[in-house]
Image (cartoon, rainbow, N blue to C red; front, side, top):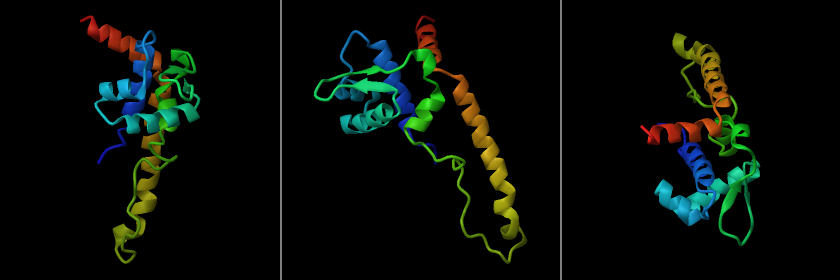
Length: 143
């Protein structure tokens, strides 16, 4: 099991919008790059628009970034596409056996660890901007 691919697709969309500034980044164009259905792209673009990360004009193909690359962190994208709720990245099984000594305590024991792990991951995402992604891609393509 993994985190929803919406996060990676959201980063892909925003990066391609930046890289393709001189072209039209329609949902069909983006879907071709992501290799998925344009309807999924439109759904994720709606989430990015709601989070004020992109601007779209109804009836006009294409989108543009609503902020500077340095102002969009991967955490912003992560939150925009509703990957997980706060402190719920890791699920804990709901009904351990209360008659079992482990079942009695497992939830209270591992929940703080899971919350700390999610917080650490989110802290890393806050430190990486879309500019970092675009720059890394440019550096990787020249090697």
